[in-house]
Length: 281
Ligand SMILES: Cc1cc2nc3c(=O)[nH]c(=O)nc-3n(C[C@H](O)[C@H](O)[C@H](O)COP(=O)(O)OP(=O)(O)OC[C@H]3O[C@@H](n4cnc5c(N)ncnc54)[C@H](O)[C@@H]3O)c2cc1C
Ligand code: FES
Image (cartoon, rainbow, N blue to C red; front, side, top):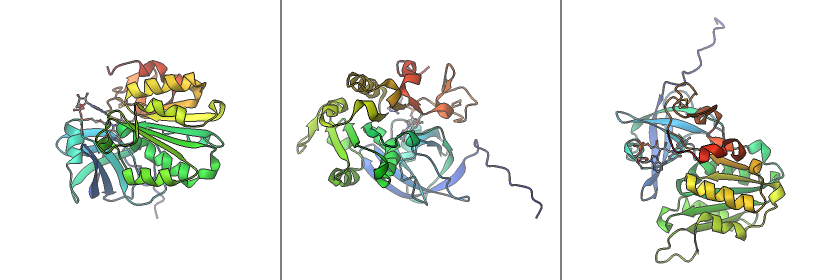
């Protein structure tokens, strides 16, 4: 034995992974279970992301959407919005892609003990929050009230339906869902996700709210929570910005002193309120 430690993997070099499973969740959303070739998949914290490469097309930041306690494949839920995300969602079982990560700072799990927790998601925003929900449910006794509020444009866009049903049936969790526009057969709530807030009972002084969705949704959610008396320091948001290196080198995601890739993507709202008002550079 030489005692020489192997060099840590280069965070800029993707490892190859294969698609083990592919499932359609909505017309433009697919969940892929990936099996990295070579070294076992690294553990991740809820809210972190990987950089996924569709070979010959490009690379995109995609959050982990699986259970952080589960060993084995790496799970990502991807909405096809452009060339890279479309190419990723078109991969089939056995196809190869590049994967590097995990990157970023996730949700503040350690600060949730004894708190009422509101998980508030819009559209694809439920995917980066699903690992938190798994953790909240697995360690339910650590928290006071747990409320999951989820809104989508239409019923067809609703992700993880069978899991939503399972969460709804739990007596120790409040689940409320809504759609912006109902279609035939929808008997649930209609309205933007903030209209669900009056339906839950939480103590504004001991609540922590975790928000992920389109920025306009997060802005309105912050406004509604603040008017309920929830302090800005108790609200966390997951920010999306174009990423390249994902390790704080290229400056692509930088706003003033903040690198969304390495200081985020999850931030306490009072620290980034100015970011939520800024468009992409
Ligand atoms: C930290 C982080 C985590 C992310 N996690 C996820 C995730 O779990 N699942 C997921 O599907 N996406 C996620 N995204 C967004 C994802 O990275 C982008 O959708 C993707 O990179 C777009 O690249 P593209 O080449 O497919 O589209 P582009 O060619 O870059 O964009 C095509 C068009 O779509 C628009 N567009 C780009 N991004 C979005 C968007 N997010 N929503 C709506 N329109 C958009 C562009 O403005 C443009 O008009 C995450 C982003 C970040 C920064
Ligand atoms: S993506 Fe390069 S600094 Fe954040």
